[in-house]
Image 1 (cartoon, helix red, strand yellow):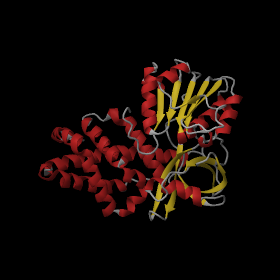
Image 2 (cartoon, rainbow, N blue to C red):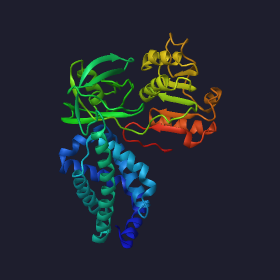
Image 3 (cartoon, rainbow, N blue to C red):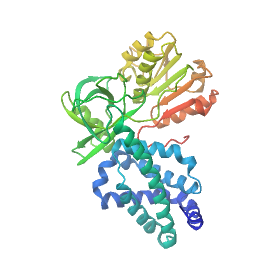
Amino acid sequence: MLTPRQIELIKATVPVLREHGVALTSHFYKRMLSGNPEVKNLFNQAHQAKGHQQRALAAAVLAYAENIEDPTPLLPAVRHIAVKHCTIGVRPEQYAIVGKHLLASIREVLGDAATDELVDAWAAAYGQLADILIGAESGIYQQLATVEGGWSGWRPFQVVRREDSSADVVSFYLKPADGGSLPAFEAGQFVSVRAFIKELGLSQPRQYTLSAVEGGEVLRISVKRERPADAPQGAMSNHLHDHLHEGDMIEVSAPLGDFVLKEGDSPVVLFSAGIGITPMVAMLGALARKSPSRPVQFIHVARDSRHFPHMTEVEELITSLPKAKLKVFYTRPGADDAVRCACVGRPNSTSLKALELPADADIYLCGPVPFMDAQRRALTECGFAPSQIHYEVFGTGEMACA
């Protein structure tokens, strides 16, 4: 329990964190990854290179300081962080490493302003937050390990099928190498996969939405090839495209995630761009099996039909649903796209109003962060409440309107 004086000291650092938080977290990551290089395997080096993790951590530290008297409003964010941690195998003992380097970074970045009393206050605050996260993660790990077919940590899987899903997306069908069963999971959930990336000299985790909820013995992930191949942001996708073939092995975490369909009979809008279609395909398939009479509008934005992942599968599912509609936006349509292309360009409030989306719809949104920012604003202009718009940010999100 923090003392009143410690709370006062933490709150006094809020202005400093607002101005210098990214400098602090950037210093922290450099210090920790050089001082304890063994933890590099836990961190997405693409997000490190782009500064995503540094900015995300700075925002999290600031939010914690601002709510230090009552962290209750942060519990949804704690749940989100705990889920992400559990998919990459973060363990309780690693919090001590983070704490050591975080406190040292406070001293080194703030200089004389970092008095012993202030550092002690942050040590207590960090200990409190670490205990909250460790407790949340312990509960998730226990749930994963005890559910039928479940597991905690990494499990070896074999690729039993590989297929091209678009010009730059490959789908991998994965089966447990131990011959065991899989746990039940929901459309929209994701797994992490881990592989050694020769170019980086590291094992790297990446999170991929399960693009199908078929049940039984197989998981499906769909991976877009990112460019350039020799940069951190393209290392894993290019590795999987170039080196993961039928019969090969890869490590996989158990399915997790809270971006799932709400129960009920309200209309559903599945709205995606690019590889953000993966949870939407899974959700559409789940609706076809469990709620075929539920009204559905499927909106997707792609460069052209060649870059529309799972296009044939989506069209077949839409056809099978009596109350389903498909709307496609192509930003650079090809000569053969006229039939399928309902609209050229990107959606905006005007084009969304023309779709006459049901006022009581639950809207599920997934794609690049700028796309989601723009579409959340457009949907708000169309009269939808924030509570109706559910979204998923791949990896470390920096969504301005979140």
